Length: 183
Image (cartoon, rainbow, N blue to C red; front, side, top):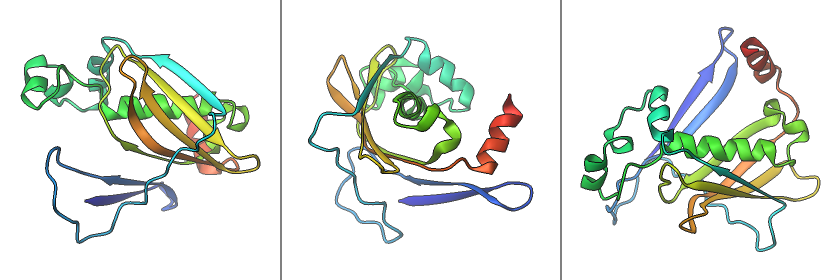
């Protein structure tokens, strides 16, 4: 299933578009009749232009509950095991946020400026667990505005975000205004 949400500011100007897809673990053999998700992006076969490694804390999932996601599978070991995980998992928002920060810290975005980030997409492929180290590998062609990335868990050697694509461009006045209002 594909869902699109559009965000506009007070003047009605488009600020962002969020596109998401949903799935049910273990359910196969059906096709959506609605709009299809974008085609998957493969990482290049060459070595990454940058690799950013960052640990998560054991308490990270509990802290991320402050984002408003109170799903017990992020905090309660019994609930996590009931749905097939060995222990509580890290929020997808946390994993995605670590990847976004890696894009900005990679040296591939001029000045690491968040206002240069136009679009960020990725596919969640496996869960990450609190306390694991996230390793984001990034590739960029010279002169391109596209950065391809994937995020793996160092300790287990599994990819948790794949087919990541960051699109960078000139500073957006809307993004710049939003960033300035937070300072």
